[in-house]
Length: 390
Image (cartoon, rainbow, N blue to C red):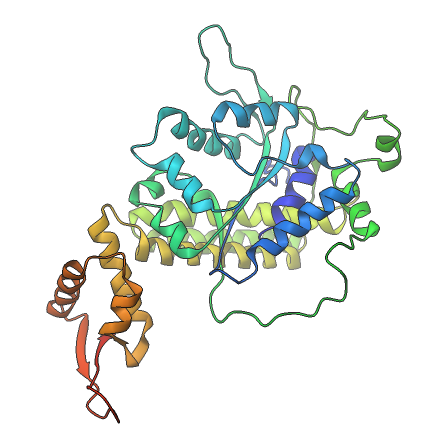
C-alpha cells in the first residue's frame, strides 16, 4: 500500500482536486521494515509494469536518487507529475537535513517541502545570476521511500523534525513477526493488461493515440496551470471530515510543542488519501464517500501515531542521547521478563561498553529500570536481567 498510493497519486496528478480546499493528491510515503520483510517486492513489481507498458507511463517515473535540487527541478519541468521510488531512504533524509549538509543538499530538503505545498499553485524556486526562476505549475511530486527502522531513525536528529520535511511523510511502520511466504497465483513477470488499462484511465491517457504517436492531451504540462476535475464529497463524508478535524484539534492541544506539526498533518493527509482512493476507484466520476474518508482518516491517524511514538523514542540531539533512547527502548521491549545483560550488549555493539553501563546505571538510579537475577536457572551461572518499570 505504501508503494501503490504514490504511484496512483502521480498518475492522477494535478488533474484532480477536492474543491474548496483545492487539495491535490501528491504524497510522500515511507515504509519501514526489517530486512527480509519484502520491501523490495512492491517496488520491483511497479518497475515490471513500467517495463511492460511500451513507454506509456515513462513520464510518470521519477529518479531513484536525487543528487541536487536543480536536477529534480529539471525532472519536474519535463513532466510535472512523477513518482520517485527511493531505497535506503534514511540515508537520503540524513544527507539533506543534517545541519552539516552542504547548501546544495539542504536545497533539496527545502524544495521537497515547497513542492509538497505548491501542488495547487506553482513552484518558482531560487533565482541565480543570469538564470531567472521558471514557474512549475501544479507540481505533483510523489515519493515512496523504504528503509529499515534502525537505518532510518539513526540517520535523523531532533533537527530533522524541526526541518519540516519529516511531518510531511506518511509513515508505514511494519512491526511484528516476519510474514509467512505467499504462494503467488501468477508469475511476477505476468503484468495484466487490465491493470495497465486502469492506470491509463487514471492518468487520462488514450493508449491507442499514444502508441500511434499522437501525444496531444496526454502529458500534464509544467509551464501552464492545469484546471482540475473537482471531486465531490457526499454529505456523510463532509460530516465525518468535520468530526475528524475536531478530534485532531483536540488532540493537538494535548501533545508537546514538538509533536504538533505531525498532528496538524493528519487531516491534510486524510484528504489526500481519500482523493487518491476515489480517483483510483472511478477515474471518470470519482466521489469521496463516507467509507472512503473513514478509511483514509484511519490510515492517516495510524501513520501519525506511529510517527509520533518513534519520534519521541528515537530522535536525539546528540549521540549520547541517541544511545540512551536505544538502550531504553530495548529494555522496554523486553517486557515483563526483561533483557539479559549479554543480549543487551549484543544488540548495542556500536555503543562503547563503558557508556552502555553508564546509561544502565542512570536508568536504575531514576527508577525506570531494575536488575533481577534468574536464580532458578537449571544450569550455568544465573543470568541478570534488566526489566523496565512500568
